[in-house]
Image 1 (tube, rainbow, N blue to C red):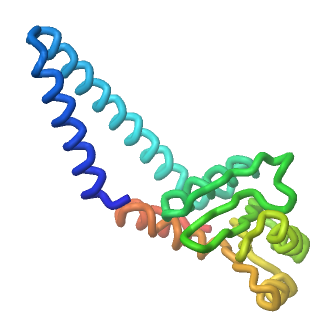
Image 2: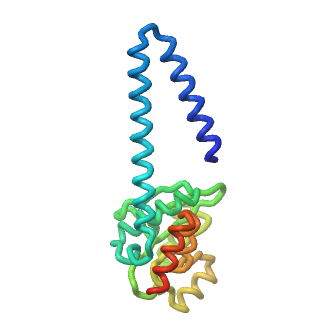
Image 3: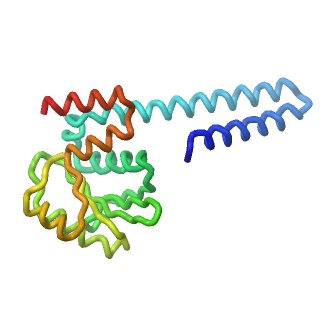
Length: 192
């Protein structure tokens, strides 16, 4: 949702709330309610900023590479949510070749995440490609913190599987982080 729409909805709701409160005859009660609402809003903003800070701290590629598989899947789901996708995070026991279902407009995308330092072969690609019919997806992709073998690249090209390696992942991270944080992520990649 666009920022200006969020702001206008928020301001409208706030004005209506204050209008109803100030209509009450007890001014102390009205001011107490206003104070409580203001404190709740400040608390919500604080939680939002903490979540943003945590996401940015985890956006260093070295931190991402150290993540366990479940953490990497959750991080990737959060990243794609920030990119504007509607996300269904599948439970690991239910995944059947797909960790995340991402929706955007007419696209339903099966996403499989593989963390680790080893080069990715064909097997994970076959798994995510095979899960497309099960989840009624029209696209699939494999996201890794590593690289892909030549056979995996050939399989992906022949079957229209989108491959996201470490460099592509960094580009997506930079897209959702501000310029200062993107520079930090980029400089830490050069050390790898």
